[in-house]
Image 1 (tube, rainbow, N blue to C red):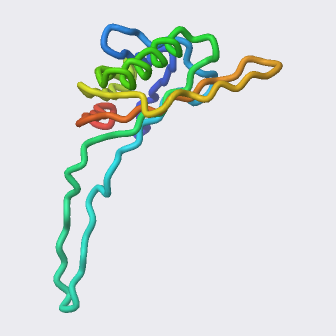
Image 2 (image 1 turned 180 degrees about the horizontal axis):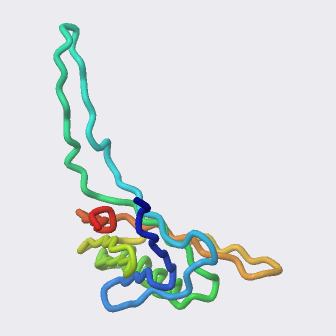
Length: 144
């Protein structure tokens, strides 16, 4: 029995920072989610007894790659500047794949550093690194 054919459409991946809708995704890879911490590790003693440790770290690194002229670049730069000036530059993040069911969310994230600003003959991308507080990733497509 053949499996069901699924379709991915990058236009149906929605990213929002609070009330700001992210626009101007880069041409290729535009968002990457990477879990922090060690996950589940184990130690085996000299007598062969094994113990697992569950890392409680539920924070993530989010890398967002945008087109050079995306209005989200200015929004992120403003948040970074606000954070450096007042410590009040955090914002919630929601990333939703409308076709695949993946949902990522957190109440607090912040820009770790301003994006590099390369200039060239052609438009360049801006890569932003964000860090989150406690976050949740649900990949419901695997259960369908």
